[in-house]
Image 1 (cartoon, one colour):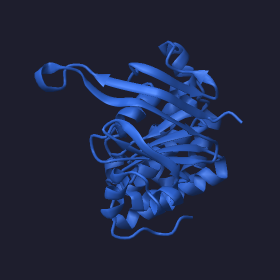
Image 2 (cartoon, helix red, strand yellow):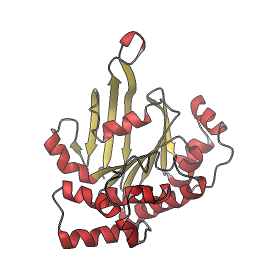
Image 3 (cartoon, rainbow, N blue to C red):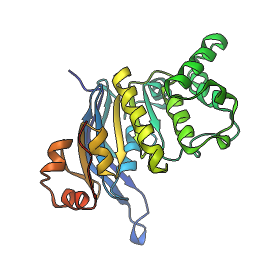
Length: 261
């Protein structure tokens, strides 16, 4: 079976950001795959290359080299009009629940926006789809008339998830989706995501620094250190018998790990 998402030897370099203005190597020959119904967590400290990898996977930043394939189709060689047609199937959920939503768009319009951009908006079916999505992410339909600043952080992140699901994607790229939320809200949002994955068969790439969370929600984990994957495997295997010193350092910083689901 071909994975939904395959990344091979991905390399990302930023020009002129190092000392004396030399280029900075942010991602160094990273490879991994994500299957339907599977969550791969990409973990590491700040500056390890996690978000740069996510941006390259989404083609928000073109990689210097390497391959990104979605359902076997190479994305790095596609032009923007061709990419635009595929973006509905590969959707991001960002870290900042407020910053990822326009303060001028009401919730219902924010959720409908991907349908409009993709040319899929129908006044009747579109309104029904927005109502369906609000229910799917556990929000009352009356919230559709509100602006983001009238919602809590957890509600805003649920709106972001509903917007990502609007065009029926196959893969979600989750960039620290709960790190900005209160601890009491985080579990609810992650339980929502895992439930949606089970219901919809989504593949998920989870960008995260919290190994306790990773062990609870992911199936596989890849550990990034200075732009390179130093260890990858099943979550239980990596967390219980880590082979790399850096992974052991990350685990030592976690006071307690909940059981694997």
